[in-house]
Amino acid sequence: MSKNRKSIPKPPTEQKPLIEIPEDEKWRLIRESGLLERFKDSDQSPSTSSSAPTRPATTGREELDGPSSLAEEILNAFMIITPHTFFLIMMDM
Figure 1 (cartoon, rainbow, N blue to C red):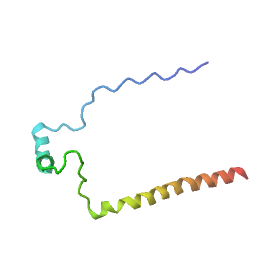
Figure 2: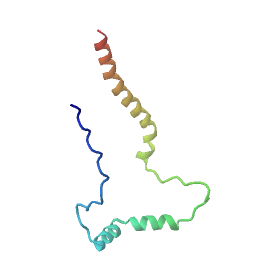
Figure 3: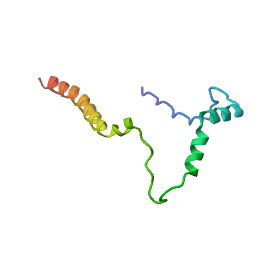
Figure 4: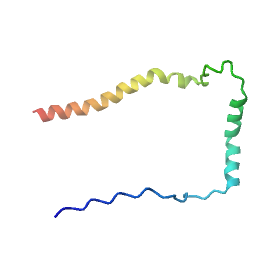
């Protein structure tokens, strides 16, 4: 008569990683990628003012993202409004 509801899924238990990477291989990859040096350099750089955050260095491409993000939002809104308007008009007929 009535359908039984699905049982509540159990919280995921600790899963094995898909690939086992030895610890020394992990450290080799970290050293080769240069992540440690990048963080060490940022820790050692003298700050001009500890209370004022410093702006990260940007390239010319990143500086152009400001105005284009507004255009992108307008485009996204247009892409959502257009089909909805079409279906609203079709349902009204």
